[in-house]
Length: 425
Image 1 (cartoon, one colour):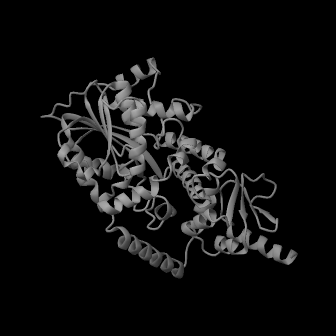
Image 2 (spheres, rainbow, N blue to C red):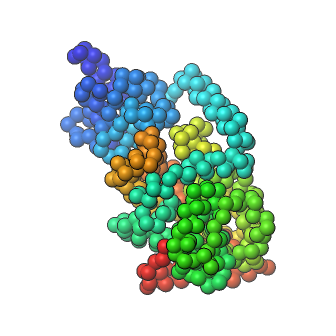
Image 3 (cartoon, one colour):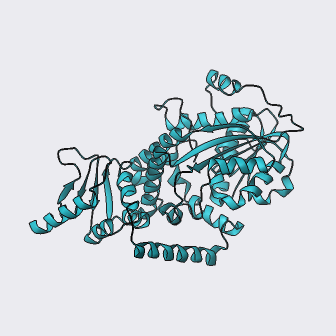
C-alpha cells in the first residue's frame, strides 16, 4: 500500500505541476490524502470515491466526464465548491491527444443526432419546447426553497452585496419597470415570463395591463395561480405561446421585456427574434432585453456539461452580435448595462439555498437532478467571476420618425425606487 500511495502522489504531483489556483486536497476512497501545496490549508477537497473515478480524473479528463463523475457521486467536493472550478478548468484546458479529440467529436455527433431524431432540427419550435420543458418543468416545490418568495429565476440586482436574495430580486423587477418607464394602463408583454414574477410586479405596482408568454406548461399553471391569488386577473394574464407565434399580437404593446429567455434563441434565429419583437411594439415603444452573453475571448465549447444536462441547444452570443442584430432589425440602442457581478452574487445565494435545503429538495427531485443543478449553479458563478460570460440589460427603442419620446437622462430610473421601497411581487 505505501508503494501505491507513493505512485499516486507522484502522478498527482505531475498532473498538477503547472496548476496555479487556490490550494486543494484530493482524498481517496481509502482515506489517503494528497495536498497540492504542502503547508497550506486546502480551500476545498476533491473526494474520489472509486478507483475508476481517479482514472477519469487523471487520464485526459474532459468537462462531460468530470461533470458526470460528480452527478453520479463518484467524485464529491467538500469546502468551497466555487473554487473547485479552477481545477476543472486546468484539467479541461490541458493539451489533449488526437484520440481524445476524436472521441469527443463522435460523442457530439451522437448526441446531436439523438436530439434531432427525438425533437427535430435545432431551434425548431418543437425542439425548443422540448428544451424548455427539460429545464423548467420540475415541480415548483423544487425551486421555491432556493429561489425565494419572488420565484424570479434570473439575475438579481444588489444595491449592496449584503442585500438578501428576496430584496435584490425585488430591486431587479423594479429596475426593469423603471428602465421601461411603465405607465398606468400601458400594455406590457413579458416574453418568457417564467412563474410570473415580472408581470405580477408590473401589474400590481405600475397598473399596466401585463401579458406573459412561456413555453413551460408548469410555469404557466403556477403563474396563473399566482395571478388569481393576487387578484390581478383584470390586469394580468399568462399563456403558453412561442414568441414566433405572436403574429396576431403585432403592434399591440407599448413596452416589452425579455428576461433570461434570450439565451434560448440561438444566433441563427436572432434576426427573426428582434424583428418579431419590434413588430409587436407600437411606434416609440421600448424593449428591454436581459440576457447572458459570452465574452468574445471565451471559446465556444461544442459539447459542454451544461449543453448535455442543463440547457440543451443553449448557445450564447456576444454582446456585439446581439446589438448589431437588434440594430439591423430597426431598433435603436438606448442603453447597455453589464450586471456580471450581480449574477455571481445571485448564483452564490442560489447555491447556498440548494445546499441549505438539500434534504427538502430531494423529496421532489432525484439525487442526480439535485447534483446537476448544484454543479450548474456553482460552475456558472465561477464563469461569471472569471468574466467568461456576463449578463446585459439592453434597452432598445422603436423610434417613430426619429422620435424616441424618452427623457434626456436616466435619473428617473433610480429616484422613485430609492424613495419608495414598497415592492409588490
